[in-house]
Image 1: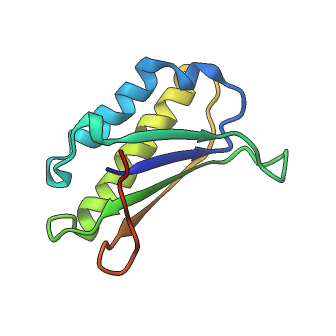
Image 2: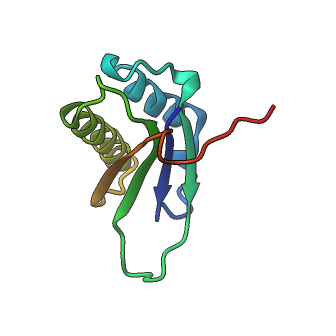
Image 3: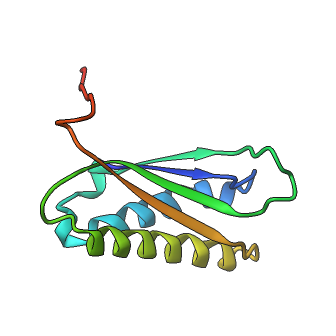
Length: 117
């Protein structure tokens, strides 16, 4: 159940459409080693930055549970695919920008986690 937080995206609502978000979730779910469905991916947007001249879009993937099959190569492919998807989306809207992606693994034996319903 990874959480994808997209920072410094600004007020470009075209990137926040259902189609764009669903496509991003599909991009993650298509990496079979992750064993994640589209419903298991959450996408959030953080708009601000301290430097108004900084146009870099930063993407942080968190809460990706640490599992044997989620090797560094798989996490690197996840970062690459997310970065390409967002970069292509920005270009298609006429807003090409630098995109950086970090994937952080989550170890439930070392980090706290609870689900409340």
